[in-house]
Each structure stands twice: as structure tokens, then as C-alpha cells.
Image (cartoon, rainbow, N blue to C red; front, side, top):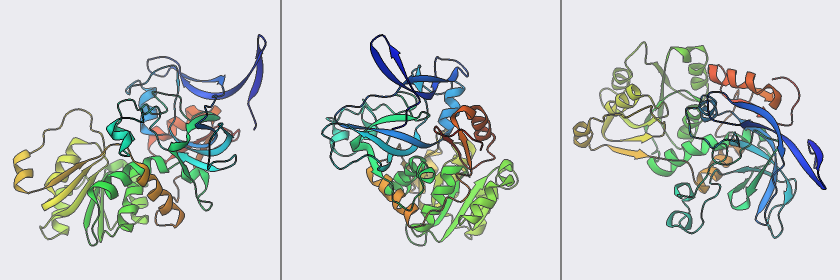
Length: 365
């Protein structure tokens, strides 16, 4: 195992690693620090991080607009290699390629844990803001959270499974996609482009994506490449009118919100057909007043979804392995840890589908 450095503190030798740490509350307040490599318990493994994607949550933590518990290592969309196995661990060995679910510190004894829904456990603490995350050379992981990465899936692409699983849990696990469905996806961000593909793979007949002027730079082209039949710029055309025209006034079978924008959400409800389904994934800023009477009279079903479960992760790894979901262009922008500021700026610009940090790297993007 390659460690950053070993120092002696008194009579004890301590192995250190580099990590991106949110060291206190406030805008910014992040820097690379040398911190102790995690020690593992009997039920854990030590994972050497290969790739970790920058999420919108990470940017919000930088801006101090998202809860966190400094000092804490941020980053949670990661993949890597097992480098050390805890005593008593079975089924996992050094060198295994893995990704991990986010349900760190779950209690294991509540109704949700016992029924396979650890994401709802009150004791859950996700890495990257409530517990140490993966913008670091190593992270310790409980083995029950691990998923094996198929050999044909590169590790940088495997780092996309975490956001992808959120969409899969909502779309495939809750709202479901029926063969022949007319589906509208609100938003053209990374998760939306992954969701578009899994929706097509699940049997959707026609797919529409909506976005803004900024998406004309490349996101609409990417959506078309990944299977969208129609893209609608909401700043130039009313998406509701576009969908109703495209369906001869019938409306969409399923609308999936990944924008979190109130106008898009309200428009999405209006473009649904009678007895249509609305899948809410994006998180809005503030409260939204829903036209309740119209929704009731339209017999529409709204599915709310949070986080992901075991099956969603397995589904996503399978879709990546057999090519049902492509990742062309998603991992083109990879930065070493010491260039994290540049990586964050690019992620914030929206000009890249996804920006990856390689904690082992020392080169350029």
C-alpha cells in the first residue's frame, strides 16, 4: 500500500494522507491537509480512492449553503481499490474494485435498517459532510455498503454510480417506466443525462428534456446524443405548450424533475396527462405551492424519492457494464487533488458534464 508519508509522534509512527478538508464554517474555509489514514474495524475495509466526482453538494458546502460538520473531509461520489481488509471480513480481498453506498453510521436495528431502507435511518451519516469523505487518498468503508465494480467498467466511470443510483431508485424503483411511455425529464444536468438513458433502456418510447439558455452550449447536444427525441429551451419556448403540442393535447405519461426549479416543477405537473405520474428528485430552493385541486382532479400520482438503495446500485453497475447507459464525455475532466480549486470552478461553470478528482494524480486535467 502506497502511503503519503509516515511521521513519528512521540513513540508512535503515524501514516498520513492528503485530503481536502472543510476545516470550519463559512464560505470557502477548505484546504488540502495531511491527516491520518483511517484505521479500520473488523467489519471494514480501507479503500484507496481512484476517482471522486464533484457534486453540487460539494459546491454548496464550499459556499456554506449545505449542512456540514467541520473539520470534515468532503466528497462522496467515489470508486476505488481495497487496500486493507479488517479482521473477520469475508468475501472481500485486497485489490477488489469497489464503490460504496452512502449510509455510513446507520444503526442496523431500526425498522428501516431491518427492511433494507438504511437511507431513512435516523442515525445515518453520509460521507463528505457528516463523516469523512473521499476527496482523499483513502477512506474506510463498512463492507455491507460495498458493491463490486464489473471488470469492463473503468473506475472513473464507476464514480458516477452514486448520482446515477439516486435516479435509478426514484425512476426504476418507485415511479417505474412502462413500455411505450412518453417521458419528460426536467433538467439537463449530469443526473438528468444519466436518467434519460436509463429511462430509454426501461422502455420509454419518446423522451423530452427541458433546459435553459446555458444548456445550448452543449447539454442539449449531449441529451440528443444520449437519446432525447426533443429538447426544449424553457427560456425560449413554453415547455407545457411544447409537450401538449407534441402529444396532440394528451400530455406526458411520466414527468421526472431533476431541476429543483419551481417553474419547471409547476409546469411539469401541468404537462401531465390524466392519471399521469410525476417523479420528484431535484431539491427546490424554498417552498412550492402545488395546484392541489388540479392534481386531484387529474388523478395524478406524485412520487417523492430520497437517496438510493442496494438494488439501485446493482442496477446501475449492470447498465454501465452492458452499455445500456453510456458515459461519453462524463469523465473527460479529471484533476489531481492539488488542483481542486480549478476543478471546482469548472464544475460550477456547468461547462463539463462531470468533473472528477483523482487523489493519487499529480498531472493536469
